[in-house]
Image 1 (cartoon, rainbow, N blue to C red):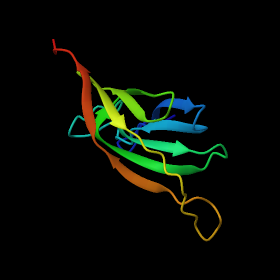
Image 2 (image 1 turned 90 degrees about the vertical axis):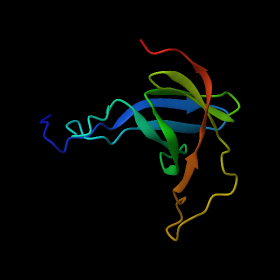
Image 3 (image 1 turned 120 degrees about the vertical axis):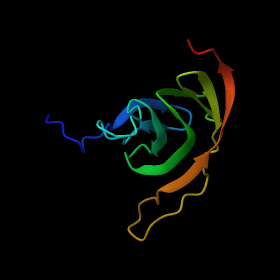
Length: 122
């Protein structure tokens, strides 16, 4: 692979929730070479895919994370940032909007976090 100023980090973590039968993928999208020096191994978007591999949700997090987990009952997403463990409430939609092509419409929702645990920076 050739890297240039437009090369982006892609998906950086993945989790499957058996109860919801959904696949969750953490996405970065940050350019490897960026003047703001934003860490590309962190992401603030989680795409949710159904069992057919179709993206059905885009969750926009208020804080970037580098790794995450989904609770067994699917009610929360826990994320690791550089200084804390964050908890994002997750309510999966029951009714899916369907496009004219018959596939689910991608739903975008913002997710606010609360600190579940934090540690001092060194």
